Image (cartoon, rainbow, N blue to C red; front, side, top):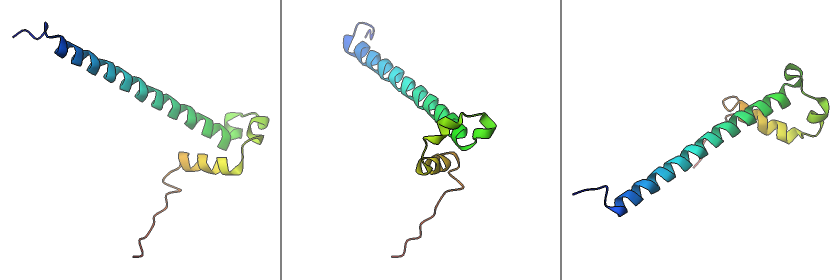
Length: 85
């Protein structure tokens, strides 16, 4: 039996390759966005070290800075909840 002549199998393989390429692209995008967010967080939280423009920092709320701290330092802000049932 020749699998190369079977259009259904070739179609499934093509769909699989297409989905694999889409997933690879999405994973790369997520990694890039995470790196960008880490760099942004560092610039906001450590402006003197990174030479961040003070006008850039002025527009960021305390709540946003707190979220960035939780993102950068998840182990420090990790909270444990005890079930009292």
